[in-house]
Image (cartoon, rainbow over all chains, first blue to last red; front, side, top):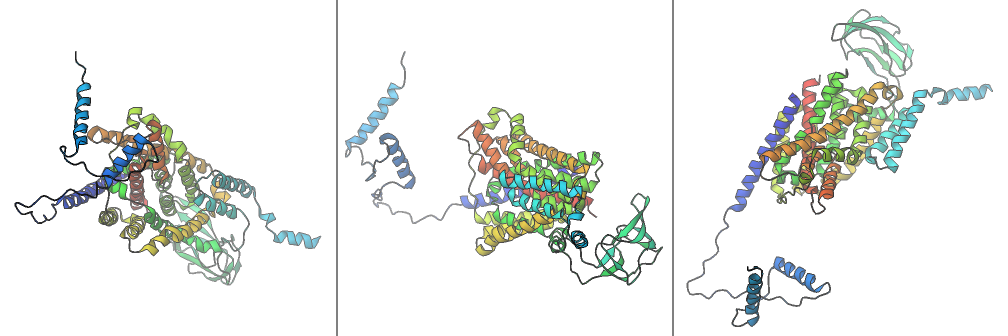
Amino acid sequence: MAGFAVVMLSLASLWVLCEIVSRLFKRAAELPSKPGPQPQAGAEPAAPDAAGPGGEITAVIAAAVTATFGRGTVIREIRPPAPAPVNPQLAAWTLQGRLQHHTSHSLR
Amino acid sequence: MDVLTHFFSLTGFGLVSWQMIVMWGVALVLLYLAVYRGFEPLLLVPIAFGALLANLPTKGLVNEPAGPVLSPGDGRVIEWKVGIGDQVTEGQTLAVLELVSASGTTRTEPLVSHAHGEVVSIPVSALNTVREGEVLVILYSKEPGGLYHYISQGIVLELFPPVIFLGVGALTDFGPLIANPRTLLLGAAAQLGVLVTFLCAYLLNFSPGESASIAIIGGADGPTAIFLSSKLAPDLLPAIAVAAYSYMSLVPLIQPPIMRALTTPAERRIRMRSLRKVGKLEKLIFALIVTVFCILLVPPASALVAMLMLGNFLRECGVVDRLVKAAQNEIINITTIFLGTSVGITMTGERFLQPQTLSIIGLGVVAFGISTAGGVLMAKLMNLFSKEKINPLIGSAGVSAVPMAARVSHIEGQKADPSNYLLMHAMGPNVAGVIGTAVVAGFYISTLGK
């Protein structure tokens, strides 16, 4: 069984070497990236991105729309909601969420 | 009538023996399996066709050219039957030798000519002692050797298997293995069948070299099996090659019952975490590490490991596209044709129709089965110590029939849980098995080779 021991030890050693290399790569990837220029005090915060959400969120929204309304539904625009006093619908979402949460508990 | 009789004597009909006719049947069965049943056709078609050619009274196909005739062993020349200037024919007795085996026993053996030609030199006189491989007589003829005498040098000189490994390396993505390197242990454990079968073959009175050559069938790696057999047991090469490639094509039949017997339904449903992405630099470093480490560990496996990793480095570096395409296509395809037919052309009836051929075929199944079990059991053992569980089905993919064994693991996993995708996880041990089999072959060559 010396042969079995040789092959187990050699591939186990390769495993250790691969782990060392992969940890070096992970460490290199985790190194913090160079910080960008700090905003000056009193500067206005950047406006929200008017172009809409990123790729992943768009895909999720599209999937949800398709699941709810079926294929063939066309999404013409996606934009983030404005704050609650400006957009009463946002308050409605929050209200609906609270309602569903409260009605999910069965009270004795 | 005399003309007809004379003509008939010039044809090959009179040279057909019963062994040839039986081997025609064997070749036809292999061709049917390859062409109509899809049994590893890339190798079995050339092997089977070569076997057909080996059992026909060909001329100019396999004959050796005239040249030096070497001593088959240590001993002495008792008597010369020919002299300088004599014309000899293939198969004619040139001398009588007394040979001494390693155990000290002596035997008398005729020295037979391998070709037609004229005796031009006899360097060794009668009653002189000789060593194995020493030139005893030199024959001359204008006729060159047959086509496959020269093509078969690719096996004799151990060229074809490493060149095929160049193509294998160029076709293989080691990413799944690098992303989950503990699956190297599964590839190693799947060599268990090789080592157990070695013991079984040895107990069946095969020599150590023959036992190792038979056992390597369990590695499910055709080029490695041919590489090792041509070094340690060239007479068994045809049977071993046919067994190896036949069983590789039977992986979807042989493995699943063993996998199901050794795992519970809950284990078969284990989901593994998605593999991380492996970058180009990491793959290049992996190729270099494996090359250096494996060659330092088992130098006799250098040819296989070096060509495997050279092919992989060419693939991963991304700057030699033409070379990669050549390795993946033209080089490996040409070599496959010549390797297969050269193996098949050694399948003469006298060699193949022996009782030991059945033993080899039986031991091949044993090797495969134990290798499959070894990989599965290693995965289960690793699960005892590991927080992140491994689906034991991927352990069977350590049998390096790439990518068929990985596909079998995936399909068995899907039967337990249709939404469980094991293919990429199984590719890790699958390609680890290629490295493991090469290491085992190197170990056998270093310990058993001359």
